[in-house]
Image (cartoon, rainbow, N blue to C red; front, side, top):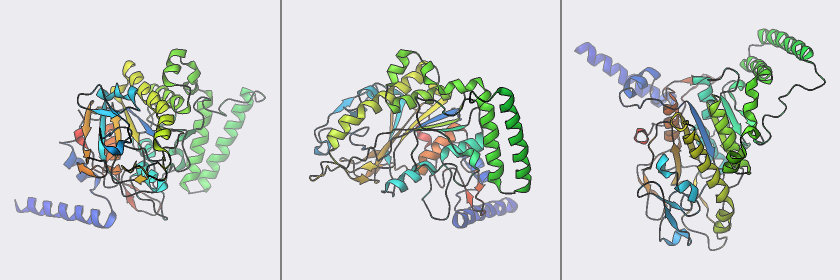
Length: 425
């Protein structure tokens, strides 16, 4: 008994030391032993991360306040989930709410776009001394790719604020798709280059690259050689056609819409079918509605509503939703009060809404709530690291696993975030 108590005391000391001085909540082994009993079984094989940049108004979308003056006359409507209402701007998503877990108690301290976007993608605060990896790069590193030719991490219509692979090697950065309607550009062999010439050049590049890597210890040298080799393999692969959404029938393309966000969501579904691990689709609209809130929402919501609803329905019809976790995220919410000067809403990190669907999460469920006017968290606050830890857990990542930066500092996939297990069915 004395020995057992001593072991427990040592364990407590180690945990406290690691948390206080290294910034990591638990050592990987301790985290696994403590969480194994309560953690849900990982069901998601892929994640589609829908990012609505600019700070999406929670009141005008998925956390309406019926009858309140803060709504500016916008109505709340019923949904396919009992007792759950959304804004009238989202009639198609209203019919998908029985598949969605709304998290209406998201909260942050980051009220500047760049800082909020960084936290949403990395779970960390931005600092001048280090760049942290995005969630997709963590998935690529810890889980790898299901498809041996396609990349594990893809970013569709991404903006310059995306952190990329951070301090991870460059080959773990997301493959950028600038125009989802144009497929993977510059991926075909030029007509003037014969197959034999292409093979000869690829072999020469491998030989020269391998020699350079042997002489250069920097890990990015090996990473860039790996990128070149993977690109050459993809150019020869039949899997390259997965990037061509024109192969979809006209009815499916129409369901998603002809706008960029809809095309991006359709491409994301194709990539999931092909075994890509993590796909982020960024809406090309700017939800930073400082001016004329009602007009802005009237113009922007139809395409977002169409694309997101079509994605959920399509994944369900194809039997993919159970193994695909869809996440809708934004950097913060917007103020309950509409400005009398600009008729818009300001930045509001105090409370906002993200949602999840599929991948083993509950449908028709609301986690947490904001107060009567949508200004503060009233119940069950959830941080960005908490939600990112939830995504990591759904994929089967060890949220306590430690990776070290080049300077030797320890980091985990979601900082000190704790998975919200109540979201899982």
